[in-house]
Image 1 (cartoon, rainbow, N blue to C red):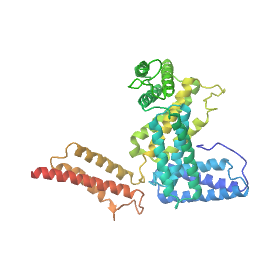
Image 2: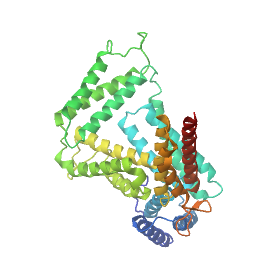
Image 3: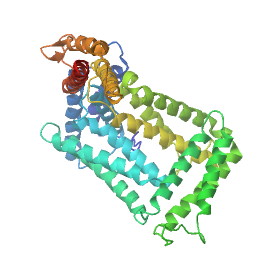
Image 4: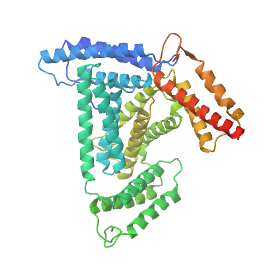
Amino acid sequence: MTDLPAFHIPLEPKEQPILGEILSIRDRLTHLKRDRSTYIKSHDVLEVYEQVIEQVHLLNKVREEHGKPLEQNRVDNVLDDCFQLISLFFLTIGRNNEAPAVYSMTSTIRRLLDHLKEAAFYSPKDLESASQALDSMQKTLKRGEESHSPYLLKLLRDRLDTCRHLLSDLQSSLADLSPELTPTYERLVSILRSISAANTRQKFPVREVQGFQDQLHEIQATMVDGKFLAENSTTPAGQHVATELLNRCLKWSEIVLSRQGKIDERFKHTYDNLCDIRNHLEKLSITQAWSLRETDLYDYQRQLDRIDGSRVNGNFEDSSGVKADLHAQRTLLYLIRRSYAYIYTLIVSSEPVSEALLPVFNQLQTLRRCLLEVKRSGGVSSPRELYPYSMKLNSIDNMRIDGKFMVGSDIPEGQGSVNSLLAECFDLNYELRVEAEDNDSS
């Protein structure tokens, strides 16, 4: 389970009813996640959220009475499941900027940072993205101080602090890397990742990997006496960081070319599972706006957590306890990291709009892109060319009741985002029409 070890400490008798309640809540959340017959309603999610918070307060009270406030057992594992699901539900109903929505993101960032630290190669851009996400979540918690449970806020702050400590460690590892060497280092990171991606293709691209190897040799040829030089022939700081990465890239390219994309048969089943997960997440990243319900990410998260958690001292082992070779180890870890990265991207790019309004929101985004493209290409020669856009915008505008997009008697979340996008499309359409009319009159 994410961030929580699988402890099974015998429960205090008073914790048994709490476990029963949160198991029931988890089952309800799971059922709600699977129900595709209707969109997920805010009041259903908020009702379950309040039930979880109530059980958390009871649990804290029981543990304080018995002097075990930090105890970890199955109750905590099930609570983690509930918070993960509720977090994704908040994203699904468009409440992205509220504290509960932060929980799932902290889990994903923690996993990614752990893997970056273990892999020992990453670019400053990777860390910058994580830092921006953590800053954004910190602001979300600040806004939620008056409206959410102090327990939840403390839990989330602790998780953010853990992520920040990991991020700080990673940043310090690159502290010696000079600006002169940074472009070379980032290129090496890109090449290493490209080789790893090619290594997992269904048909192994020999020439492509050989091309990456040639690029590595070109980089190596720029070195003088084993060192990278700046344009003024000085030796920039961070030589060991870039040199170690170059050597690692060269070794990995040789291993990958020798294996031709064939994984050790002992780990073929795990490899196939990870490829399926990676491929599904990749497809979701392409079709996200039209096909993603954020709660779908829960199952992928848990599958990855189980596979990642099955390692022994960081190593994949077969049924006999024999460790995987370097090729299998790095290949499996690459697939895990890539999948977590897709989940991170999908969560970050989630729009603060309820899934009930997503069809309208997506249509407006498409209209906006089209109108902007028309504007960039020089506008239209006649107002008549804008009729299709005007008709579509008016049909969407007519869907509103008293300025709101309704679904039955419900007012889904995300009204502000959709109305703002609609207004922007009307403005773009008006500007193009005025410009076309002025051209006609002149």
